[in-house]
Image (cartoon, rainbow, N blue to C red; front, side, top):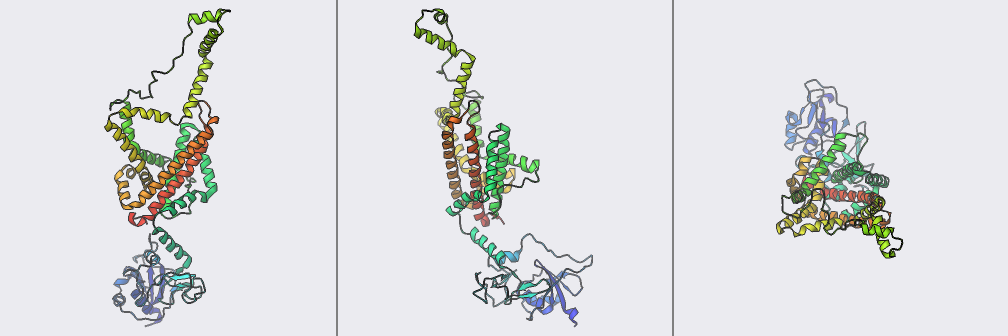
Length: 497
């Protein structure tokens, strides 16, 4: 048989190789070639390796062992009816097996070889750092130990004859898998606190934009919400996949009204429905009288019965004002009544009242306390709905950020099933998120107290709104990173590749 007739081509997920029959059989025994891989003898058409008569014995464990003579080639022109091998699968099975040091029936080392632990030294030269590592037996080698074959100098393991991969690439993958299986704890919380600070310029820019948009009325707040939720969704998805070094700002270079505006708004509405929907429904039922409660207008609370009413100027007061010999005390009281009726005085009084309401953190709480004379069942429903919103909000964010699917967000069964699979990890993440929210509230109160003298009537405390918005941006990024890390640490239970 001529040398040309003995040449075989094999197409695997690693590429197309050319070798002799004995070496090809040895590769089959070692598990490097699968029955579904394509082979071709000489210039013949491609067929599955398991269908080649000369290779069937090798798949049963019989092979002649010879030194391989391998060269890499470009795929030659094939006939129109030839089958084209798959060259770019979504996930490389061999790489996954190698990185976890687990070998199954589809990728097993040759008999007699034991996969060593990945070390930081060459197998043959312990004082030299490795540059390559075998894909099958996981043995590390320095730059001089592997055999290099083909025109492109492909490194081949001198022990088992399989191809080698760059050590740095594999080491990074192994470290990522070790990190993923290390459990979720306070180290991850510290990592989440540092995460936004890895991109200081982006953090300052995002916080400034978010803070300014808080001052731009309702439209500005909507835009701020879209930007914030876009960042939260981006961080959760990237961190859940283990991409901890990516920037938290999404790519707005190719702006899409649907993807960058409609989807975040829809997901935000879905989060509101699934978390605070029960509480909102009970509140609306109280306001519109569906449930018996305090008499209240749909547009706000009724004025208090004891509220002071403006005092009209009586004829007696006018007489005092026109009497030059009137009692000074009565004259002062009449002047006060008259000044109270002037438009400027009323505007100043309303401005002062507005300023006090804006700086009073207990005003909303006072309004809420009016409902606590309701029937016990209604109070219990309110408490349960508030507890549900607080507890489920982190999971609603996680589902929205990872799936970006409205139907999954509004379906609480998706989140509850995810919590079941995550187990204690979610409760740890929930505690961390709650702690960040409490710290954010305390910071907001401190900022509002310090900047209270800067509050303006009818406009509110603009400096406090800006500073609080900037801190809110940072705290929400920390929350997103915590949730992303919790998903990443449960990737094996959640099916995250």
